[in-house]
Image (cartoon, rainbow, N blue to C red; front, side, top):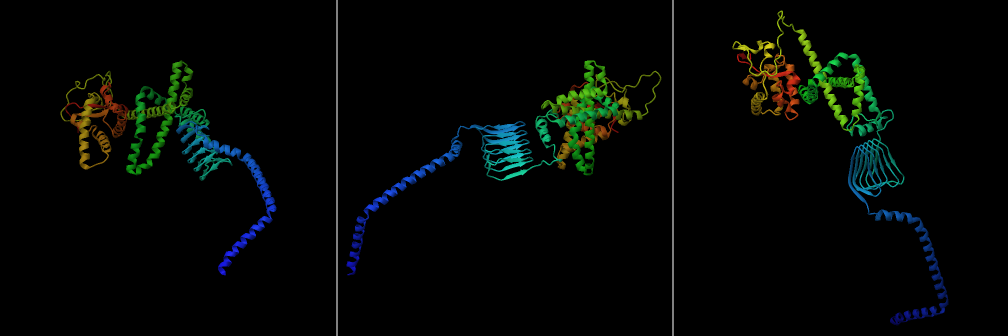
Length: 528
């Protein structure tokens, strides 16, 4: 029975379902019609909504399509500008963009980083890397997009509401009213003066004010110190090359002086005062240069009225300041005139000291009608000149300066041979004692022996010594000056040493600066 029940029940359910389907057929047709109409209305509503949505989304889709499909970039690689503006156009693409001393404008695309130093930056395009502005302001427009960080130090960062920055934003302004109020002028000074190699620029007003202030100070120096200024001008006029070499020596010996003072430790206290003294002498030397240029112009134009010291300084200052404004040549001229003026002042000071020492000595009275003693000899005199024989064993310390001035001068080759002997002696000593920095012991060796004996071991072996042009023996101050001056002879490929080979006075550059000469000792004299 159970098996028959499970078979009959499904048959009955199927029959009832078929009868019910035949009875409700008209209603089914009506429901099918209604469902079809509903599907049509839904389709029309969907089409209407899609049409309205397409109108609002059309601009955005077009922009995205243009951004994606724009492949005709003008590739410019890495863009690095120094001292001028940098720009990437709307259809241009660069790898990296670096601007130093100028403004940068980016409207296209930068695949790497964008860096601006000492300038403002404007971005309306796409930067794939970091965006950095140092000592300048930045503006990000409506179309700007930065995938990296935005860092602005020393200026203001302005961001449009539509600009997009994926990374962090860092803005550290340095502008403080009343403290950095001239920040813009300082930046212009670097752009117009430092990067263009000129001390004065007409586009930077405070450089003109500063130049005018210095010119007034030079005029004040001419009023207070007319005689020292004129003596320094004559020293520069008569010894132009020596003035330049002396100024170069002073500046070149600065690091060596600092090293020597650092060794003594206590001597470091003197460094600031020495630097201030050199600065004061340099400023005084610029007044000397302006005075000399003005005098030369007055002489060339045959205008005696311009020969006045004050007018000469004003005229010379106007000429030099105009030349200072020439890019790259201005800084070169400034350096040359600074060295020249400083050297002229140093030579003038040295001449004043020599005159002061000469006035402090009692000259032996000359007999009536006797000609003055000859302190110098003609340059054409040979090294072996006739002289009365001396008593053998006479110490050099007993010879008077007039006689010593007549000693025969030594040229280049004997000097070289003596220096070669000294190099061997010092080099051997340094090697066995294992002393580092060979130039310092060698430099000290020459100065010590010059100040002590007036010659080195090599010079004594060849019978030559160094003395002043007047015939007087070297003192320690002159020995130090001659040693420092040898740096000037060394720097231009030893040209200053070779100079003694063709100079009529047989003097090297450091001899001319120190006022010394190398002579041969006649037979009969001893080294005390």
